[in-house]
Image 1 (cartoon, rainbow, N blue to C red):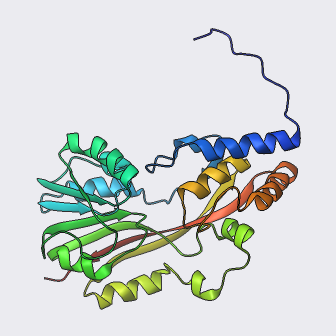
Image 2: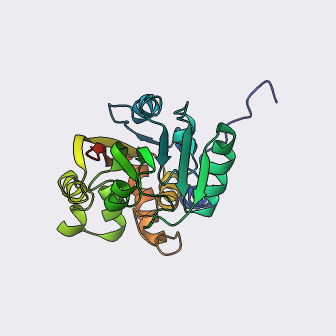
Image 3: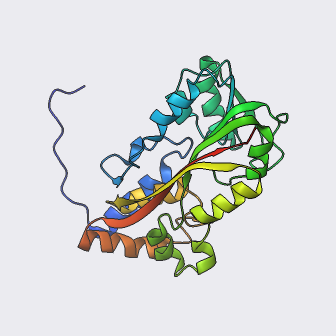
Length: 268
């Protein structure tokens, strides 16, 4: 590698800068839940509780003989949370993430199972003492209750209501009350209790996000696909250009994520 840095090029014309940023955000891979690409380009506050640290403690509990991580993504969070109980499984449905999770978790003794994100889960009733998930796309409470052993726990960090809605509404326009109620803690508590689970802990925090360039927005919308369903650069080029102009003139685009920590137990 060179011992001195190359000269810094001068700024591109505004239209060329837009095209280059959009192309860059559209070219980077979207598999897994590693967000290191965003370093220096976007930021998000983290919840105060430290989900991975708490997950590590729960997996290490001697009372947990078998655990299941649902919708594990690329396996990055679970990989950093060992050691694991004697039986450890994980599920994932998206093929690129499935391949990544298998490469990462299989050497650690985790069985990675391919399967759809909807019921039924390919496991017997009462198979697990602990079921976990970080940012599941959908929470199937009845299935979680079914595969938990009596006294078992579900421990997860969910995406909360109105997450990144500032960005969603920039592209889609105002979103209605029904959409804003999705993933609301009160709704999730009711769903869990209807499935026969008891909520032991539930906490929600609202966290600041900043996008420093339109390329970061493009990559985010390609990676977190439910933010703007059906997003493509071609379909939203005009809005992307408007966002680029806004960031150039005013600084980072500010949005907010919501995270909910939840622990629910199946009664004995």
